[in-house]
Image 1 (spheres, helix red, strand yellow):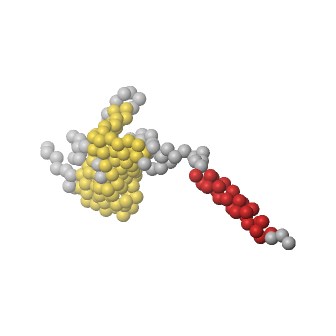
Image 2 (cartoon, rainbow, N blue to C red; image 1 turned 120 degrees about the horizontal axis):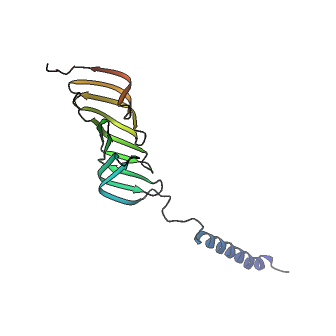
Image 3 (tube, rainbow, N blue to C red; image 1 turned 90 degrees about the horizontal axis):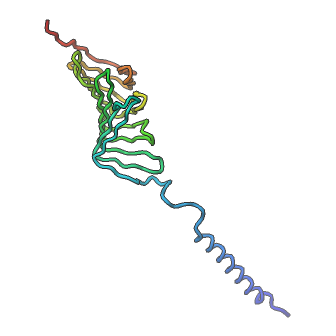
Length: 193
């Protein structure tokens, strides 16, 4: 009589070893995926005390972005900034200065997301004192000259003040529109005859 279990044992062992060898090879073999960090959100560049200028078609500075610290990320081509200062220049209007504690800029610089103590300052003119608007966050479309927020906004100009929730700022038309819960006090500046 033949002992089948004793003859099957070496075949089973060889089958298990072959299966384990195949599994081990496939588990340790590098695939076709590149592991160069391109799809991770790791910084690929850091800048300190930077200045970025964007020019219009005529060669004049349209806006200037400065800050003490910027980190660039390769996966989405975005940049994160600390204490940014964005200054918008127009030949026919006073300059606008936007500051915050933090910002994120999209890949081509067309949108800037600012947060934490955002301040928008329009320089004083001969006819009007400086205007200061404060909000917790702001989205700026740099090339379009447009900005907006859905957060509370407080605006002061001289002794006048106004508050509201949500705002749209059009730098091209020099308008500042509050969306809701608007209240304020307007005090006419004294003029000398």
